[in-house]
Length: 504
Ligand SMILES: Cc1cc2nc3c(=O)[nH]c(=O)nc-3n(C[C@H](O)[C@H](O)[C@H](O)COP(=O)(O)OP(=O)(O)OC[C@H]3O[C@@H](n4cnc5c(N)ncnc54)[C@H](O)[C@@H]3O)c2cc1C
Image (cartoon, rainbow, N blue to C red; front, side):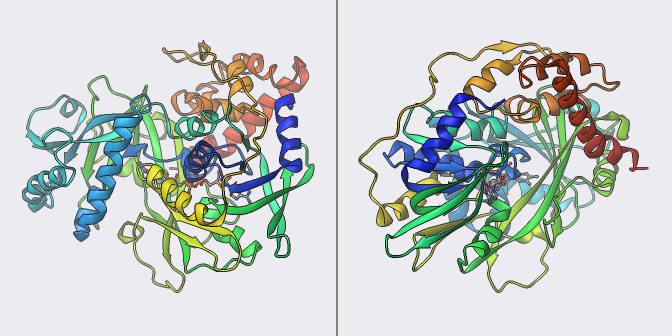
């Protein structure tokens, strides 16, 4: 069902001239949308799928001060990221919280133990001692589920983490602006268009992925925040930049959380400087992520049985109670867009590549491309892009009509298998651009990550509940609702069941 608000938004998109159009509603596009709307720009944000349906739904949700960069002694980056982390903790207390992490050194690379203590202390100082002072702990609750004698001391240090989920964090930047004059459209692809140099305006073809209707939107300026698709979009519009993305796939498996699991654990795996994390999140704990170089993302990216096999094997080196595919509650897969120079042709291990961002402005056309980026630096990235926009276009005088009433408080409901309530589907449809069952289960709530088999339950026991929910998308038609659930079950079979069945 298409809401009347969406139809109105589509109409506005084709009738107005926007100061800026942002392509991509992941963390980069969403935080930039917020920044520009706040500054009075008339902004159109489009995403070809749901908001946060790309890499931004698959992260570790850490807001970290750049510990990784200490390895290369890139102290300026550590100081900058630590500053960004502090600013997020200060300004976004409801969304971001300080959390202690427990680093567990590998016994095989025993020397790491002696490096880690001073390194974490130095890291803490680079963060201007704002977090808790790092300390060594020999006895800790998590030891109870780790293999005996394999782990001695741990190092406790503080970072921050997103409170609810990465997708809800992205959504918040967008919905906060729903009473302001910006238009954000999910399931709306940029499929073509060109720059009219006489009028100095972009005419962009947007295709509504729900109805198939194509519209033309006018915009003075375009910002490409399409994540791993940034180069594809640039090629489509013949935009040249000094950068390109290389791709690194990251997979987590979700396992049932143990009672004694209080802090995220970071295990030194003793191989190529790799670490794997075990992050408590609601009723599950995420184990991963992998780092696999991909040459292409055409055809989509999925969890492969090898990814799961790799993670289970590594988990069983540390967990007292062995885990196998039947213990997996959920899978989580995303691709990191890592920025490199255009002429980069090496095949370096992805962990050795920078996770910084770069902004590239076209010398002729008003088009900005954003490469790389992460949650921690989303605010400073948005501020930097806004500086560039200021040189290209003045904030518009005329305002777009205000749209949603975002002042009412969230409504909650229960879901089988979860102790805590989740945002109600009705609320998400009315207030949060929720258009499909998957939007609700994966990104408006954490149901598909917390309840086995993406919310269906181990033996499909939640199907009747899902059919009730689906009635809200089918206009009360039970046959259509049933079909929506069957389609969802097919996706789960492909994406979850068949992967795990192939692991042995
Ligand atoms: C396993 C893993 C763990 C990570 N952990 C962390 C972490 O702990 N902390 C951290 O800060 N970062 C982390 N990251 C990195 C972070 O998640 C990404 O860098 C970030 O999400 C990228 O955001 P983005 O907005 O650039 O891309 P995306 O989130 O992929 O957004 C791009 C959007 O563009 C849309 N799009 C593409 N083409 C078009 C088009 N033609 N028309 C309209 N829309 C289009 C897509 O649908 C997509 O939604 C992790 C990444 C991975 C994979």
